[in-house]
Image (cartoon, rainbow, N blue to C red):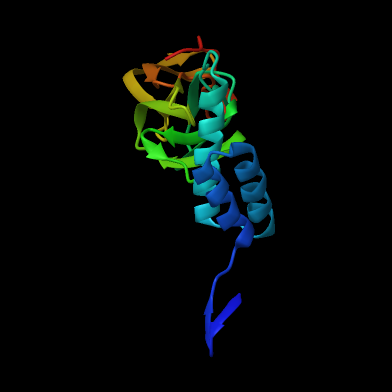
Length: 204
């Protein structure tokens, strides 16, 4: 805090303002150095904003082929089944030209500033059914990469339908035969009657 007059004070960030001056003067290396020092001392939105401008200008000066960010998801399979109320989409975006933005289904992930490596987690409240989730990462030069994954939200148990119940006499007494079918979009894996496992063909 720098005293200006009497009891009036203003925020004073000399390295930040010096970095802005160097940026305006075109000395990008010195601008980056001072802005990084300023953020290390005390991070401000203004310092991060100008540091992004400096990094973008440096990348444009260097030229070369601009590749999209490398985007990896926290799950290996592109199709997932879940019964959770909140589905957490997680992953990591990497780019030597700095990742400036990450979004999940068009919803931006909050970033204080660009980074070479950004880890993200976004909880989504999804209703029952099939959902296509789009994840996008963009670097400072505006080049993007996109990944998609399919999430099946299944909170309902299998449907059990009885078509026929047959009761008949045998030498050992009454025997009951039950005929019907099971159905579940997520697949049926086990079936029990009176606590006893019944062999079934696994599937929908």
